Image 1 (cartoon, each protein chain N blue to C red):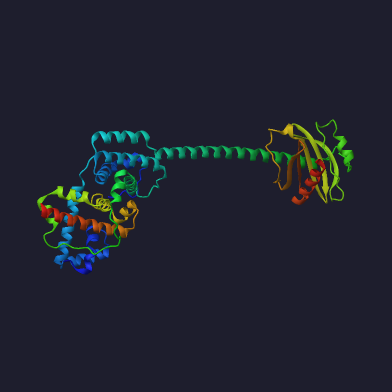
Image 2: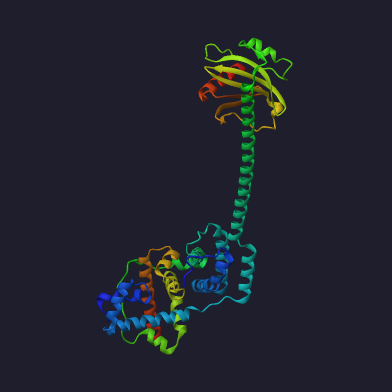
Length: 251
Length: 177
């Protein structure tokens, strides 16, 4: 009989399931224990006999051929899924790349518009006659544009704000005529440009937003078919306040 | 032998090398060529269908054997076999070591494989499957546990009982022979 303390280890040993340290201890024991060695030998013989006897049945050639054909015809190829996934990733990458290129072009064109607006503003301030109609009265300035630009617009009542209207002139953005109004707040002069959205459509991909170009603060939006730009060296909050006044007048 | 981490991802590449083994296992379970073919065919059909949900990195061989075994258990012959299965406790029982003229040594001496095959076939299906997976497929206890969805302790106790049953069956047959 095998030793009581090792009985539970016999099968695990022949199945190679003993942990290394226990296996080492057991092999040390086996060298001095004949009953356990015989018990192990008989189990190894049984294992080998079962392995030989177990490999008994083989599929016939016809069944094997049929199965191969079936599998080859119907297999859901994980590779195919991978390719599909890869194609989708590639397509997404292409879309992302195109979107990125498009957005970059949009950004460049938008920057170009702001840059041109800034140039117009600077050019006006540098001019010896920055306005063609000089008046702080909106009811004087607005009619002055009649016949000079292909649209009309409303100007806000400025009281009780700190803003004052200095006058206006016709400005051209990409050969499109529009109104340029000059406002003042404290010592800062602010240009407000108004263009017809239709005449700018397709040329400048602008949405509403604020910006900062050449240290000028600016704000733009579309309202009532008109595109407004407000730009100046005043603070962003002043630019925004004037923009809000204009928006309220345009409603 | 281990297919624990398949690198390939074609079902055909993974499954077809197991074809002969699965067929052999199926035949041992069903004890019938036609039923074994049906079982293998159904196993591959189910595996094909379920392959997209198979998680790479898990044990593909255990997965295939599990499908085959579950398919068998729900088949007519499988239900018939399990219906007659004796209810036994799953705890380990003391292993009886053999230390004299053993059935194993007699078996080897006589090269009488037929007795052994008959003895294996006569084992209840739960013992037969665990014995075949361990001895023929050389699966680890862990793999068998995954394949049969039973705890490792149960694998060990079933294996021990299967061997004892085989040993006593062989002893009787050898005596009669």
